[in-house]
Amino acid sequence: MAGIMIAVLVLAGGQLKGTFNDISYEFNHLTDASTLAPDGITTLAPGAAPGAGSCPPGQSPQLRGHKWKCA
Image 1: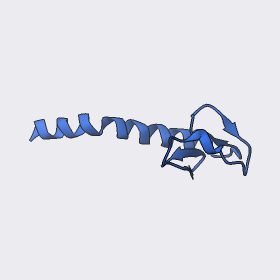
Image 2: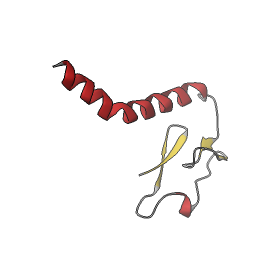
Image 3: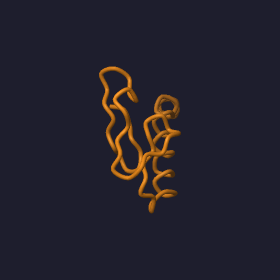
Image 4: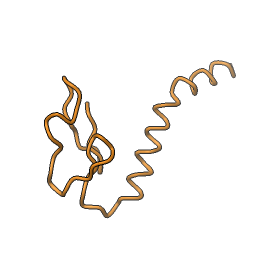
């Protein structure tokens, strides 16, 4: 049983880390009017959307909290 739990944690580790980072970012930027572009570096002005080439082909930017994500 413990082996299964460890395997699940290892396989889900990346997703858990990403979710934790997203939640931490939101708490640290609660009052920000700007948003973060999908590249994770560029800050966008309020109401602005990332450019068309900011996501891989077949994906489009979606605003989730204060971050734009490619989905």
